[in-house]
Length: 346
Image 1 (cartoon, rainbow, N blue to C red):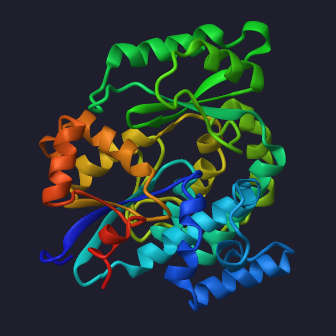
Image 2 (image 1 turned 180 degrees about the vertical axis):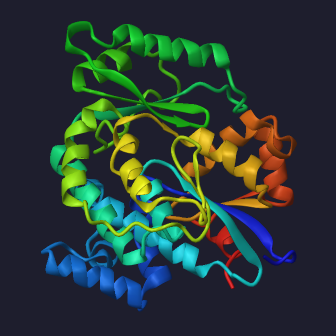
């Protein structure tokens, strides 16, 4: 471990990060790479459009590119291209985490799965989630305009879903703790009631397009199918520490690959994903100099910054303070922003 290299905490993005403005990203950063050629060949054999075709030849359509079997591997490939571009002479990745589907990307980034095996896992889960498409997700903030936590509002939101759940066939659950936002998962009756009960706030409540009720008991059928279909997934101890959706650390020297498989294709699918806890552990246990979010896009940046403000990391206490630090020396680097990506690339 070199003292001259900057320490990076890598935060892998989840679903919803590849949109019209990200179309062409993969071609720009990975065209001609051996690994992308392998990914494309596997999709061609499976009768699916290749990632290169989706990213470079087929004009972006949310109804096509947003489908799980396309969106998930596209996001994975864009993130992988960014991670492989980080200059290892200047930067050391000390831990890896992710948001929701980003956990699968983290498994590959941290070495718990080979890149091709991570690609298979991500494509399989994206397909199974899309085929089932049980329920949906709704996003709502609980911080103020300066991204400062409003704990009473958070308590009220959690009390609201408890009250609505179970009435008139409604199912509602906390799905993801996402910085200054809560993601709720539920069935259509539950989400409709929740959307009606929440006070409108700018673009919120926001229903997430083509998202199932991830990380809730509604995914038990998908969990069972995934355990059967991916029973031989070749998990191994990671090369660098991984932080999961509970804030648990999987270390290179003490991780049981079977337990890692069991969490990934078990609890993680049906229980709330605490992205905020994963970040808290990342910054407190691994003391990174910077936090890096690989592309595509930069939509996870806001939620990450909101979480850092909750922790008071590096003295951050508001959106204004965060933006001032970013202008001075970026603590958070979103590789989906080209000017920030160039800071890391060799």
